[in-house]
Length: 102
Image 1 (spheres, one colour):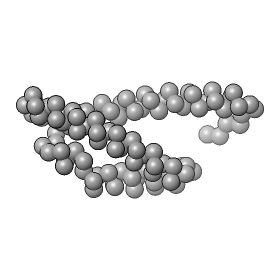
Image 2 (image 1 turned 30 degrees about the vertical axis):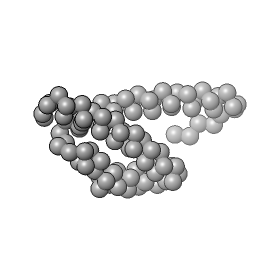
Image 3 (image 1 turned 60 degrees about the horizontal axis):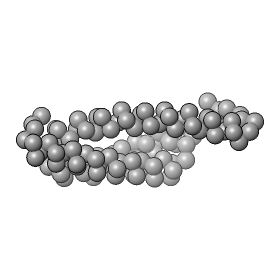
């Protein structure tokens, strides 16, 4: 959906609304990432480089379908995935220390 703005303030208002939606989606994604940690036996399973590349390929394709810049989408996803892997490794370690099993 294309919206034509008449001022920089209007552009920023739309960006602020989108940022709010993105943060809510990141919170939802993070909750699933935390759950995933309980199903993985090793830190290598958490890192899952093959899965990372599958996700990257999928989002590049989605970007192309939806008219987004594929390079921007790839960069954002690589940064996001790296941050989520770090968080998942911490959760995995915490679960392992507390002997929590799936």
